[in-house]
Image 1 (cartoon, rainbow, N blue to C red):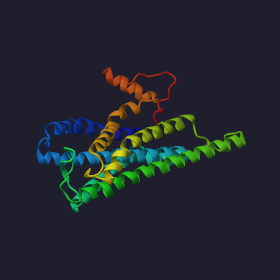
Image 2 (cartoon, rainbow, N blue to C red):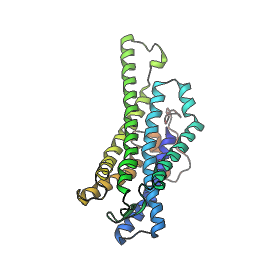
Image 3 (tube, rainbow, N blue to C red):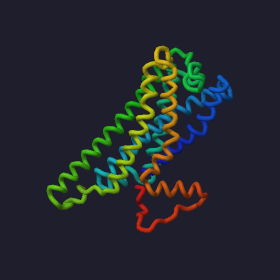
Image 4 (cartoon, helix red, strand yellow):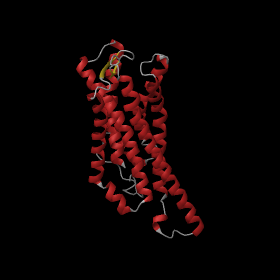
Amino acid sequence: MNMFVLNIAVSDLLITALQAPTRLAAVVNRAPPGGEGFCTFLGFIGFLNCCISVLSSALIAFNRYIRISKSPSTYIKLFGPLKSCLWIAASWGVCALIIILPGMLGVGRFGWDEVRSQCDLDSTHPYSRYYFSFVFGGAYWISVSIVVVFYVKTYLFVKNSVITIAKNRTLGNKREYVSTEMVRRTRHMFIIFCASTVLQAPAVLLESIDFTASFIPFEVIFVGIFLFGSCHAINPFMYPWKVRVFRRAFKSLLQCKRDIPFVPGQSSLEAT
């Protein structure tokens, strides 16, 4: 699971380190930072990393469902170190295809957005609104729906497991037993997903309805964009919340230490 969290961290870092400063420069100067070519690249990177973030959340939900509901051997077959790397590589490939292919077919174009003064979708292209509404917006809502489905399935499995144990007053088949730690970690991932959706969904919904900001006030669109961008900034604080190994990793990073301090009594597999 941590590999998928790292994947989200990479996309968050690219957005906050590359897009945030250039967007600020664009708003201040009311012109594309670095020229039209670089602006097109920034627009592509922005959509690519948003796609990676949402798709990684779907992979985490799938990972948690398999970890809880299936046998350890099945989990290793699907999410061993090599398989997890392949899942991550596939997520970047799929997102790149989703983002690039429609533009190659003439549906939308990355570039300067005069309405919002940022490098996003070229607002002068006649099909940019359709790109956002049906391509990016569609991919976003499909991914969110997949996440919800897997967390619901996980919840129902845990609920049935608890009922079975309560009736039998014994663990019986070990496959029916779900550890408290796994449930706690899964709940934590679900809370992070909910927080991300609350911040991201308004912007996606508003711009899917009215990409040109013709009848929705721009101030409302701006608030949605601000909330969307803030999601990537708060993720580093959300993941260490209630996860000791992440908190210790951040503490070591801030103190410039090479190793994470060992805590007696804590399993080395806590993060899985």
